[in-house]
Amino acid sequence: MQGLAWVFIASPLLVLTVGRGRYSLAEAAFMPAVGLFILLWLKRRPASSPEHLASVEYVQPGDTDRPDALTTPFCLAWCDCGWLGDEQSTEDAARSEAGQHTAHVRDGLHAWGA
Image (cartoon, rainbow, N blue to C red; front, side, top):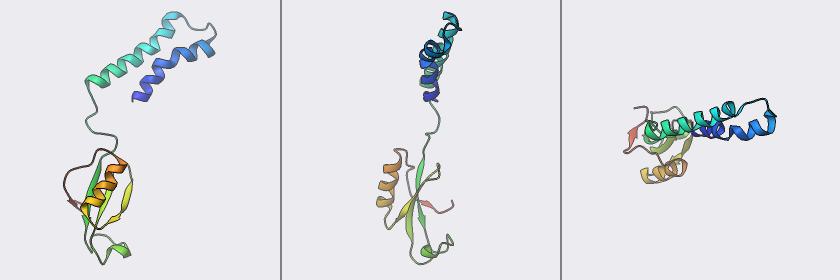
């Protein structure tokens, strides 16, 4: 959302290069005002959840039908954006991998599918 606000703020540059006198000063000033309003709104009301939120789960035999997961338990880092980490033997290793993907990692070790 911040990217959109900066597009609005930078719009007078586009108006100057492409508009060629089609827009009045008031019209050209309207878009940056909207962009500043968006930035102020986001500053006063930050998003409730981050864009990426990762979790570390403990997968036991029988939790999944993957052939390599049927014999030994492992820890798996995943993110709600669709990213999946590699199978790790320890929670710390999986948590470190999740931390490389995003700074927002849920606390604790969760059971697969819970």
